[in-house]
Image 1 (tube, rainbow, N blue to C red):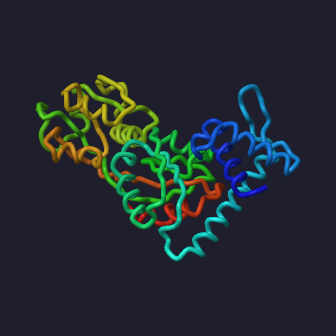
Image 2: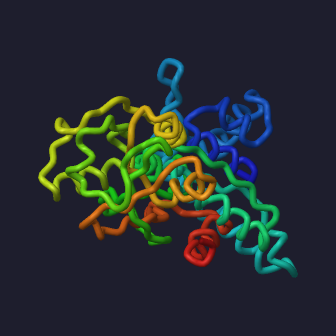
Image 3: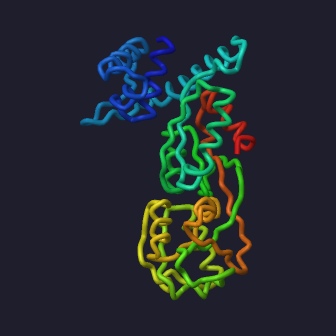
Length: 294
């Protein structure tokens, strides 16, 4: 058993696929399979059960995965201790992000972090906030950055920054000044999907004002925050979105932005990680410095 075999094994576990693991570490699928077979032969246990086309981790495989993460972390710590400069630390950081953090928060964090660790490689995928939390829980990513909390004993949240929701309209809209939520019910409304953090915050706002979703004149639903903004710019409807997402378009005179009267609730963005997952040294450094990177 060697460190490279353990690395290959962890990649197969995390990707739940021999082929995807091979792509991640730039090996052929047959080479990955050979490493896993050699590891199984050395340990004299089956690490995966082959069920049809799927490879399911065995109890022995689950135990080895936890040990492998600790061993690989120890290797990173040894390299960090022995190298003269911190910049020698290298590796991958996998992040699942909801739309607003993915577009407006993570790029700055990555830039700041790579100034100190230029050999860090980031893999960032965008999902709804709920899916982000599920990815973190399943261990398929190292961490998530999202705009709402989904409670679990395994999840630990690190607050990054806070903001508020605002109403956006096209430049052709007759809406002016701060608005009362009840006054916008007559206008066509563009809605985000139900699993987004923005939508969760909006639903709390509606409930506070005793407004049901059925009272909204919904013109369109969209998964994409960028598409939503384009719907508004084209004057198809109005919407309530993150102030961070609206500001850039407002400054460029692409749309109007309005405060919502009697809505003082602030929305937080968080970094979330699984407390039961052993992080690589690089991922741990990112998590520990996250608040300073924003």
